[in-house]
Length: 460
Image 1 (cartoon, helix red, strand yellow):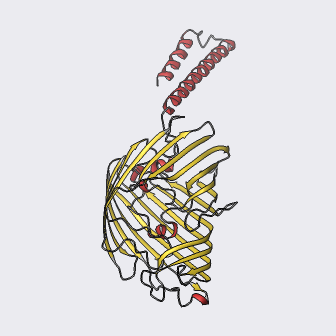
Image 2 (cartoon, helix red, strand yellow):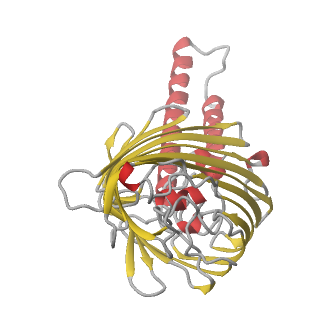
Image 3 (cartoon, rainbow, N blue to C red):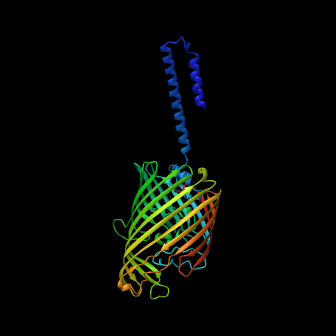
């Protein structure tokens, strides 16, 4: 290196002018040693100053660093603004454009069997613009950052997907977020739609979380100061998202606890596991078109009020030969959720209006794998399964409410996508949907996702 060469020349010059070693006194030798040490310190200080200037120059306009595990494991994909995507106090702006074509044989409005009381995230048929996302992110000051993601409805109108303030000024690995955010429970919940590996969410997310759980409230995370990734988090929210119901009240309407742990195994493997707990309360949560024992045409409208508690487990494992995710990699992930609800159910609110006790435990899981077999090309396979459970129905509604559907909804999906760059993606997806008893469905979807503007790395 240039600096080391200069140091060597300077040392040689000193030695060449020094007295003959055999005749040199101890005092002369000591003086030479001191001059050499001074030169070393001078050059080391100069090198350190140059390195600091270089780092300062590189940091201008550069994204915030991510952990080694995130760097090795992030897939090239269209991305909206996320933490670190801004340049100092200048807002970073991103626009995600997405659209689909869907071909399905059965009416997408029909809910999964045994989950008619839950939201039905049915697919759209034919050509659809889809939901566009506008993301804005910027530093507020030395302690705070602000992030907003607006959902542009193709039919008109703007929805607030995320709008929160984030700070790491607490120190000691603590990070505080307040506003509207995607909950940290599970693995997929925090990922925006454009970052999904399939066109749609797994059945368990669609049925239990209405695709994603978003809250208005506070979230605190603690990152342990260890080589192994350990993250603990807690949230207090309004309870606005399903399975809760938006209520006008003081205090919190929901709470979440979650824990994540992960690590790298060499340069080729990485993993993460997690556990979650979500508690909330529903108040007069109305469900339409619910099948009943009398066989009412079109179903009935029911109302539920009571407690809801969901526990979950998640894992993800990633492998890239020689740590190079640009050529090939494999990702395997899965999640399991179990929900118990108990309270009062009002049957056929429009006519019978009969209220009695009701409780049910439902669960669901999925397992999927994505394989990038060559640069820009990936394929993936996913299997979903739900369990409606057997409900405990009060005597007044025993002849009205279906307690046991005796059917397990399932679905298998296969996808192939092509990403010419990290800003664009084209995807083909085929699915065999057996989530509705007696109504099997062969589905075909085509999707495009395009990212304009600021770009930042996705979560692990």
